[in-house]
Length: 268
Ligand SMILES: [Zn+2]
Ligand SMILES: [Zn+2]
Image (cartoon, rainbow, N blue to C red; front, side):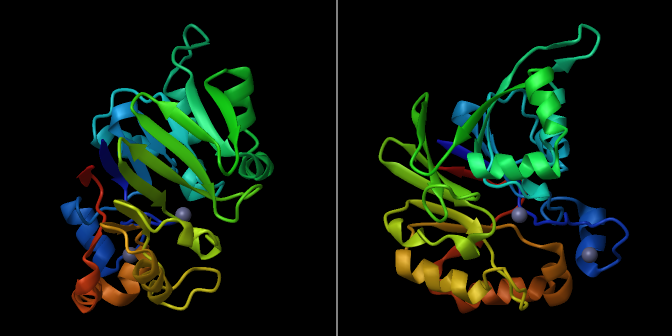
């Protein structure tokens, strides 16, 4: 299978509007790999995207993706869902008042309930314009799409509002857990991964976020064959600088992790 990182950034993209920090200036001037859209993943074999922040249209255009059939959502937060309108309405023909290609949307049931409170307009795109076919999912559900099997991994088991997705192709297993992993109580169940794509964790002390050190401890426990860390926050690049990111990679060289960048391709 082929996975492509559509976005490697965090809740705020890099460059962030108005910001004149070194990271933002560099991203504005040079683009990729310094420009980072909100975290999103493309599973090429099945035309599937995982998560769609506000900048998903730009992420899809930059990779010249011609269609998607499936959209998996990890949780309701804006940097993972507020691009739903852009994705769904891209297939809506306003001249004919008709949707031309409904997309399957998979979202944890509890997350959808919260999304309806926070971003109720989505209901119109799905239920009136019929631009998406909704699949409310829960921990343990799995979907066979072509050669790929996707399982829902609720961070806290059944009824979780946040999930990771386990992507399996033949004997290969990849887990995508891009955000909010501080509540990922079940991470120890995944000690046989060929690939883990997981959030970077915070170098700064940010309440309610996993720390970089705790993320590293989890890697030491579950020992994925390959690890790529994502959801790299502008505010952390701003506070710590690019050199710190490179230095810390050397400090933990035994773990051989890589940082994601927009457009990164991974074959498994
Ligand atoms: Zn900045
Ligand atoms: Zn996020």
